[in-house]
Length: 254
Image (cartoon, rainbow, N blue to C red; front, side, top):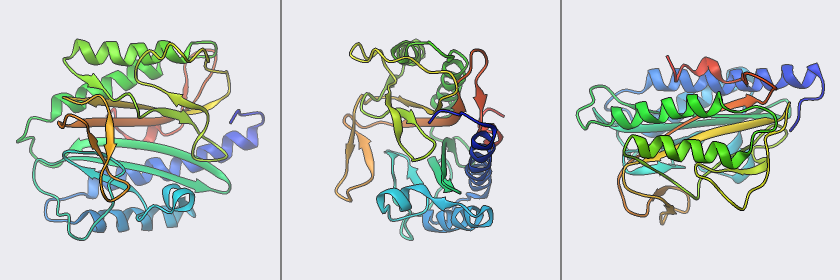
């Protein structure tokens, strides 16, 4: 969507506060021995306090309130009472929600407890790349140029990017135009970022794979060549200068 009046910006800020605060609290709440279902239910209670509804559940009938992916799971992991978190796990939580007709989206990958499996460099790379990409976005910039920046920065650090997962427009629905904000230079995409538009910018930085494949549960995605992935995501408003980061309070850059 494009912000055309102050009331729309206020509404987007409220929806973004709900998802950002929930993501930050879920990240802090996660502990070894906890199931991903327990973590998801905690997130559900937080969203409810804001009066927000889970976007994956509302939009796609996803079997959970948030997406929680662990280790080799890249994204869209289904919360489960059988999946127990352990020290050193690489966890990704993606929280998106609808509040009063407006949607916002954000995500965070982190290591649970001690980094016994050396995932932190991957996470740090993803965070830094997201920061650089977002701060290069302004009205008129080619979407493909930001994709090129993300992939170039990943390669510099010895990593790859997933080519079939992308950022997207957001606002009046969970996924809007532009539908594909890729993590590589898509030569077939001539589109440019538009001033006042609302977009969710995501990194998909990996150790081995370049494509994500859906598993037998119909939701969870893993890498075509295995390995691990870090994803970080903010919802922003594009401006003529510095972007307005609506989900900044999630603390992923702290």
